[in-house]
Image (cartoon, rainbow, N blue to C red; front, side, top):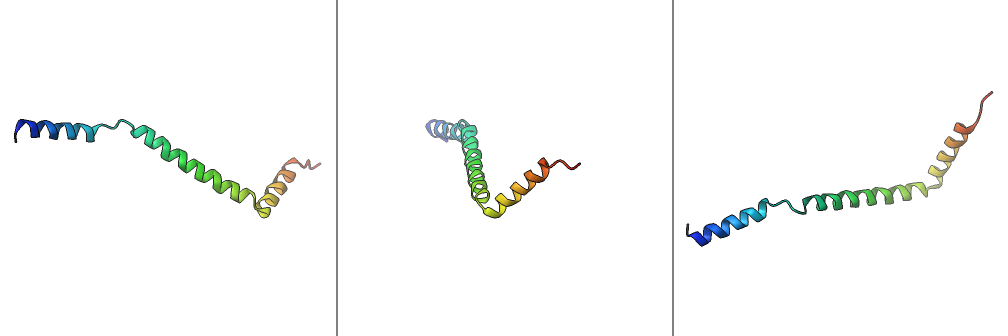
Length: 66
């Protein structure tokens, strides 16, 4: 293999092995998952049925039985 080809191959391998920016990509994916989950929770919490269940749960928790 000629020297220039080796140098180019080595440079390519070094670029492929470099994980710079990988953490940023992982944070971006985790952030997008969290946003999606939050959106799903908003849709669920707008439901009258879910709101009623949660209201009933809080009322029962705050009721003092003598």
